Image 1 (cartoon, rainbow, N blue to C red):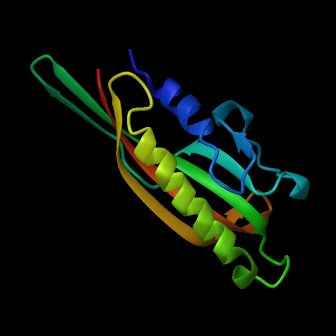
Image 2 (image 1 turned 45 degrees about the horizontal axis):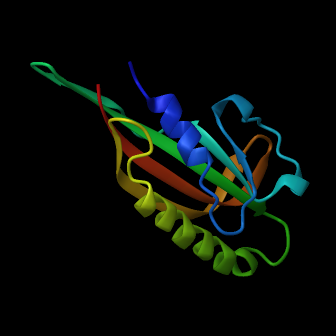
Length: 140
């Protein structure tokens, strides 16, 4: 049986610098109140492909988890210059959390991290955001 739900729970519990609101799969909504920003949304990746490998008794599954942190509405403030320093601090803090918890659940290992920052559409708005994709390998 897969432990991917436990991985989502463990990653939701990360507390990177600058963010206090995190929403796991069951709590994600298309509407985000400005008062909740910055806000992390844990989602299945919509761009990465999963994989499944079976050799004899060994079964391996690859998962991609998208951790999208909406920082501020695109038109708010002075733009990316206003938010970039805090967003870079967030990414650095996030990477420290990943490094400290590379095995977030039994038989699950974070084997890759990709981080981007820039404008991202969510719901009916565009946001400055940090978009992180975690690649997780699970041995079943």
